[in-house]
Image 1 (cartoon, rainbow, N blue to C red):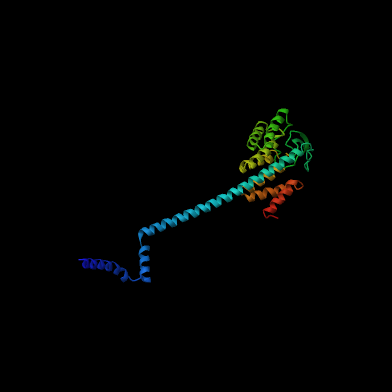
Image 2 (cartoon, rainbow, N blue to C red):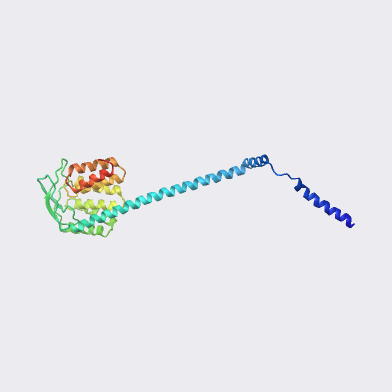
Length: 269
């Protein structure tokens, strides 16, 4: 009995081992065939396509993030430059409040306008800029009420409340369009909007200065800043034309030299 039981166990073990012993290693052809079967599996094909599509989407997102980061840096650099320029202009105004008004070349007539570089309310008689176009709006010396309103708007500018300053200067010009401080108000409205990054609004305000008040001492500076806004908005042709007009109309002004530098930076000789 024991002998029979031992033979049965031995036979069972041999039967389980023999398939392993007889299993030959897979050939290269077998492996290739197996891989081909896997490759032709519709489920695997679908998963592979989904994976590839997800990889493309992820790469697209990376590209979009890089583009947005670049645009953000450009915007930050532009705003930093505008803040710096505004601070420099305000510093010049603070140091020039007591200076005499600049005499404009080639004129025999005289009008009352605010001091050329002053944010204050003092008005002096200066030579008017000749123009082949209309002389623009006729202005009168600012009244005490107008001076207070202008100073209040300018105080906001000095506090870096550019949005409030822009609204105040705009309201001043709308209320007192014939004041000799109206052109200054339009100019500083443009500067405030430029600092805020509102280039189109800034352009409108600057153009208003030299078109509505062509004899104003702010007209040359406004023309320069309008050209800057065209440049920032990507209209290089209009910017170039305005820079060149500025040089032609005001060849001896400091703004003419700035216009030449701008043109040089644009590659125009």
